[in-house]
Length: 162
Image (cartoon, rainbow, N blue to C red):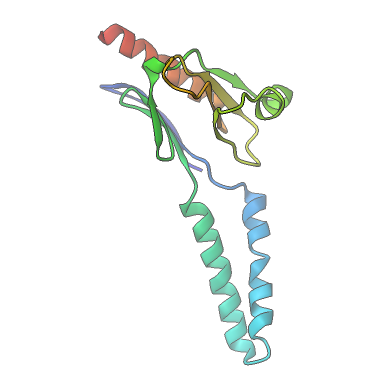
């Protein structure tokens, strides 16, 4: 998990990697004995090495494919998707029951979503661009208040810069 907020010339920058929770990584390690059982009949030594390598490969794949949420250069970036902060409304940070509702029954159809299991916080930001069919961005965050604050600061910096 990588998380940072710092001040730069373009405004405050926020960066968070949405890595799997510790429990997801532990659950992924279950593939090690399964892979070892496949090779057990041939050679027990090879089976242990193969099981370990498969577990390492699965965990490395889980970590390397984790999306990055970032506010930098006047843009909100989630993975490869990005949107200028001036196109966004006021960010709303939620946790607990409010976050469950934001992820579930209050989620608008066609919203851009990046929701990760094991991460409770959610930031919802309306899209104010009438040409954009996406009504909102809904993003998981371990520190939703910091992400919402970074979006707000970037919006203020863009407004002052104009």
